[in-house]
Amino acid sequence: MEFSKRYLALGDSFTEGMGDVDPTRPNQVRGWADKVAEQLCQDPDWGYANLAIRGKKVGQIIDEQLPVALRMNPSLISLYMGGNDILRPRVDIDNLLQKYDAMVGELAGTGAQLLLFTGFDSNGSAIFEKTRGRTAIYNLGVRAIAERHGARVADYWNWYEFQDWRYWATDRLHMGAAGHTLMAKKVLGVLGEGFGLGPGPNAITDPVLPPMVVQSRIQKARADAVWAKEFLAPWIKRRLTGTSSGDHLSARYPQYISLQGLAS
Image 1 (cartoon, one colour):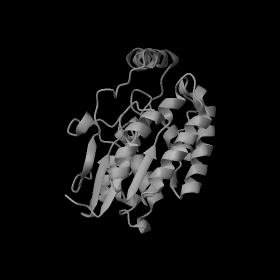
Image 2 (image 1 turned 30 degrees about the vertical axis):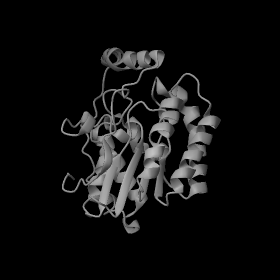
Image 3 (image 1 turned 180 degrees about the vertical axis):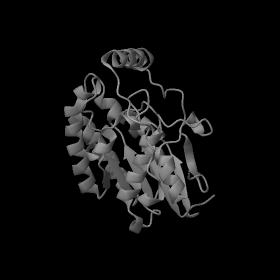
Image 4 (image 1 turned 30 degrees about the horizontal axis):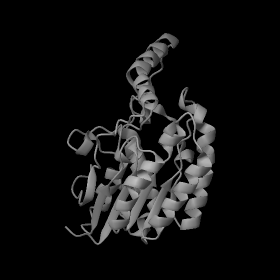
């Protein structure tokens, strides 16, 4: 099917939809990009493709996703990458941003509207707070790159609602269903109703959060121990062995499709 308007999502687990479980969809996730596309595809002229795969670093996204993206003639491109690099023990942020800038420059050459993301502020996370300084430097670079290439910015760093851990999945690394819903609403707000990209943020209902649970020190320690065993240890093992949870996965939607009628 041919579409006159085409939304292409690029990146890693953030854009693939990790944390928003849906067994009926490819890779068994839904995610904010699907939710944005569901709104766009209410207009039958819109098609949607998503090349993002969990665990991918900047070099892999450039090598694997950029050449495909340049052939797909997109109208709108969203890109988030760099989080998996920043979480490594060592990272050259300047080199990372140089590669990021070069990729965005090539994508801008397609004539598509670009949407970039700042990284999340990990303040308060016992493990990932250590990378907060790296992310702040990365964000300065992303904003400069966006200005240079005429991209819009989804400013994840300054969306303080996401500091509420009820928006997050049990792995504490990815947003949960509520987080992806809120992110989709935020993204539609950045794109703007008047931009011709869909009905705007009000088309998505605010997620309903569960009641806040106050844990005792013992309960929190037990929960942290379970999390460390089920999620942190496997994550560290993958870092040490150079493997990724996305090594054997394919892009969820490698060709443009319509998600018309799936919005909920």
